[in-house]
Image (tube, rainbow over all chains, first blue to last red; front, side, top):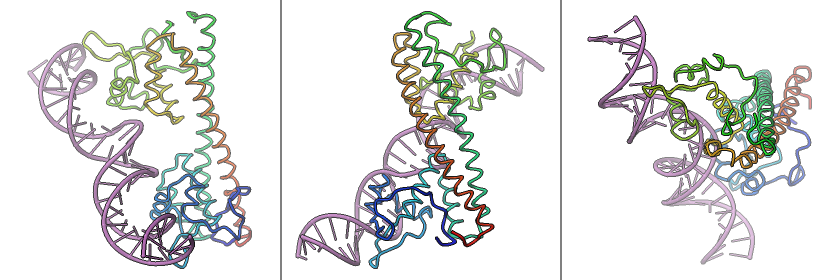
Length: 144
Length: 144
DNA sequence: TTCTTGCTTCAAGTGCACTTGAAGGTCCTA
DNA sequence: TAGGACCTTCAAGTGCACTTGAAGCAAGAA
């Protein structure tokens, strides 16, 4: 792992082992559920940096890229705007001098995610109460 | 509570107690953070049913409406499309004959929310790992 | 009486995250 | 030599959830 590497989630499994990990864009599309068009667009806006190319200019994605894409997917699930992810990707490209800023961003994101989880847990409680109400109404249709 | 009532979250606090709960649209806007325009739009699309009116036609929101709006806010947080919320609002208007369908919807939503919470918890774990990496890198900048 | 707040309808605009499509080119395999 | 998968650039379209604005009117307070 080089100093520029983003620390990558352990335990993510890949279609092919390291060393044989050369995927075409359509393989990555199939694996991630994103369209080829979208993958090119990600690269274009700076969200999918430095994908290797074959001698003829075709993209060669590796397991690292798959990991990055998975991370992006997670960030998307947190509701992070694409512009912020692009910013993070830029910091990754700038190297280890940006470790502190990257950590700050991730810590802020972490806090937001925890808040979001708490809200969703509250919502589950609200849903449970309503579900109970609707289920109980069978037995006491006009009851309070 | 009438049979048409949606079961309302307990413990939500209101600006004014039941009985004195007549709010103008701008009061509701201030309280909910939604714009007056948006509240009218909600009503127009069927997401904010049966708001009372004054003799002169002005909307008079009550605590029930505030509770409904809070529920809508929660559903929005779960990512439920507005069209689905409108569907639910329609069922509420149709009365107790739709209790089963309403419960089904909420149970499906509940499942989705639980799935979402689990994903977010995974994401927190991923973020923690990366934060640790960036924090640890201070002490071993070129380390694995 | 004038000002504020509210009402209606209708149309157009915004921001985000893609999606779609077309035009024209290259490379590799069968 | 034909086909398929890839490449580029560029423009326009989509879906969602609002947002903004304008026109024109009514009610109530200062």
